[in-house]
Image 1 (spheres, chains in turn purple, brown):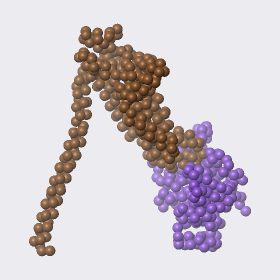
Image 2 (cartoon, one colour):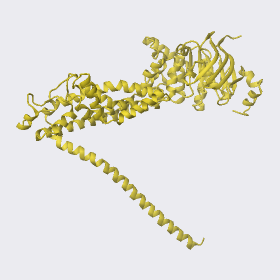
Image 3 (cartoon, chains in turn red, cyan):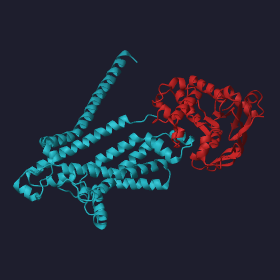
Image 4 (spheres, chains in turn yellow, brown):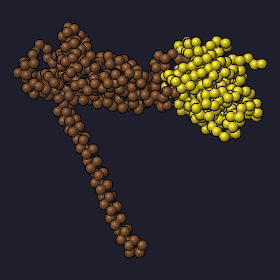
Length: 252
Length: 304
């Protein structure tokens, strides 16, 4: 049995009085890619945002239950500490427009006033950009602003920025929904590569994408975790009727 | 429909269309006419000021000199002697306006950021109302207010710093509004990106959000500075005026607007001529600030 890095126990999430996540229980395996899929509004984005407590940015958001990272409940530790361990990439590429590519990658350190030597910074930037398969394209443009890059390149820059902090877990919230098919393919290949280094949790509304990149897949519907298992089992012999209907395109 | 009827219809339509085309042209001509008409006063004002003040601008003494010492204004008027330069006013204007900016910018920028970050809160609503009200207050009221509060009650006396405070009050709403409007346009995704890296909130604001909106904030500050550079009324009750070059901000100080105001009221043609020259100098300073603002807007604009 693989070791579980992240465990969700009895998680309920509310926006005001509205219950958006209903008693979620699931555990994520270390250095595997787990996909969370489901139709719009099923709570998959809320779920992933509770994992690094970004849901707290919405006024009136609150959660009940436990989320354990290496056995420690993340809901009781400082979100600033937590977010250094759990990185996140968003739907739309969002590099910092005032910073160069180099500064974007190193931003996590700079914004936390971590003093690094030039050599250390250079190493982190090169390693992170290589991990996000962007190094070859930008290694001569490191000191230009990141905003001239294509959407796909910007998204890989955002992945590099998250990887630079050496997170235990990388959250990807529909990372390809704003990208064209070719850029999407690049990101998918990258996610498969990243499994060697980091645990990834991917939210997607694209069934085929989950099938291509994920070791485990979860299916959510109306705030419930309907089914969770290996991608192979979920796609071939789903145990819940709703999963089967979603996979065959009857809704969603 | 017979061919004859069709021809008749065509003629009617043609006539109507031709009439509309003609109306179109008249309308366009009217729009252009009134647009041009509205810039006529500007052209008159500028050309008149420059025609009157131009000769003065080429006299070095006018820029570096000050009114002759030891002479009362009536004496200068009576003798009709050389009235000196406006260096005291130029230095004073820069100092008072600069200090006014220094006071208004931190309050204005932080208030603007607060309003943009807490759009729903009741405090933000109250501040909104207050800012609108400050903007509607006539400038002379600020002069009287600072006079009563600072110059007399707190025994600060007429001083440059009192002038700066009154101008800062006038500049505040401009900076607050432009900052808020800029901050609202900055996408939340940028803030999320910084938060997700474990950045503390104050650094998200100082290192990400404010730099991304810097062009808008700087524009607001420059517009505010331009606005207060020409203010006269508040200064009459606060900075008062001073015939000498003075850099002590706790003492009365001359500014270009107060200098113009005082000299233009005199009967001496010499002093009136001096006021025209000072007006031209003030207009040039304000125009340069305006052009600089436009450059900043274009150059520093951050693309998302």
